[in-house]
Length: 151
Image (cartoon, rainbow, N blue to C red; front, side, top):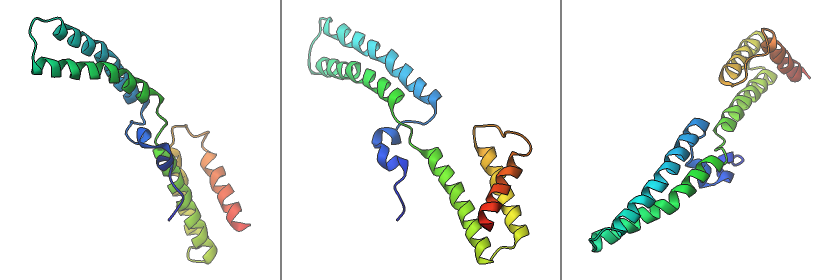
């Protein structure tokens, strides 16, 4: 059993909140707009002439929504990230470590090691949000990996 992921420590709020800022803002906006509407609906029902069980249940439902939706808006904006990107980076690091171990054990020759390492570095840069620093950035990263294995 390996070390716990970031999602294990972040709790349920991080697990059930999307990682995308855009979706978090949309959820917060909908919740923030719906809260006053729910309060208005509750007041409109209360101020009506009719009463009864159904009306009381509607007032309770809209009142609960009016109180909880602002909390949903705040929680969606303030929740910690779930750490999904951390897991992806750790998988890539694990792949490089496995490749290094196989090269050190002699299962993979140097040409195969360099080819696979190039592929890993390319996928790492393609999956990251940061643009590559230039054409030689992959070469430098590969050179550092090869030197660390040879030591």
